[in-house]
Amino acid sequence: MQDYIAKAMAFSGQVRIYAAVTTHTVDYARTIHDMNPTPSVALGRVLTGAALMSQTLKGEDHSITIQIRGDGPIGGIIAVTDAKAGVRGYVHNPNFDVPLNEMGKFDIASAVGSGYLNVIKDIGMKEPYVGYVDLVSGEIAEDLTYYYAYSEQTPTVMNLGVLIGAGGRVEAAGGYFVQLLPDAGEDVIERIEKSIGQLQPITTLIHQGKTPEDIIRLIVSEDDSVEIYDNCEVHYDCYCSRERMERNLLSLGRKDLLEIAEDEKGAELQCHFCNKKYHFTQSELLNLINVAQRD
Ligand SMILES: [Zn+2]
Image (tube, rainbow, N blue to C red):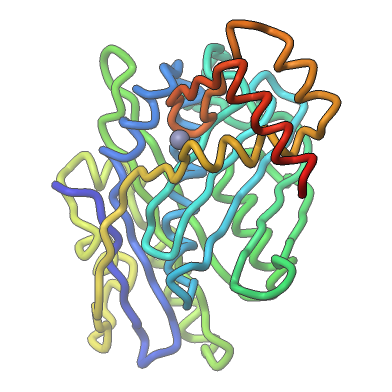
């Protein structure tokens, strides 16, 4: 099954629900970053969260960046999404593991440690919107749920999961996003809470072959008014280019650039998101410095 998000309105338009299967995207991220199981799960959850959140964007050129910084061994996690669930991301340390927690699950809270979460929304304004919350659990989904409650004041439930199989492969990944619209009644809130409480873990459902539409139907259980109105493919997408790398070099400033240009072998830059390498010869670097001087 191709990775995608299904989108629905339920309870007569009082609740918005997105459900995603992201297994291939998360496994692709694991492969390109050569990640151990614990960082694979952590990045997979953040990438899935970003993909779900992308569906709240209105403009095609809008984007969301999720940054997590903690004092645990992972160091930090970053994920970026465009409005069409094209996601990319990386962790600072891809090669560590921590013991499973007392429930026998990947201990993402320990991997992340304590710290904060930033959500940067570029929605075409002069300055991006930046929301900032302290991490409440480090397990990612709870932290994003808290971000919505605290920073956007919108009651939202997020659930994110990644299942790792033999050889560290990602066997199932996905999640859901349930948001109450301002006019949602108490009875609706109770019904949603009850059915979410009875749901099996998201990775179990996906591993059983459930589609995003199946997951939405399970979340709304007996609601007849549910309307699944659209879907969106999820994919790993990096926008890096030689021009972007040149801009990164220029942003270092003249002094640092001159230092880099002293090496007659030139310089090699690597994209953090897709690990593609860009080589600049010494003369190309000197050229860039000349251009920078003229501006
Ligand atoms: Zn790249």
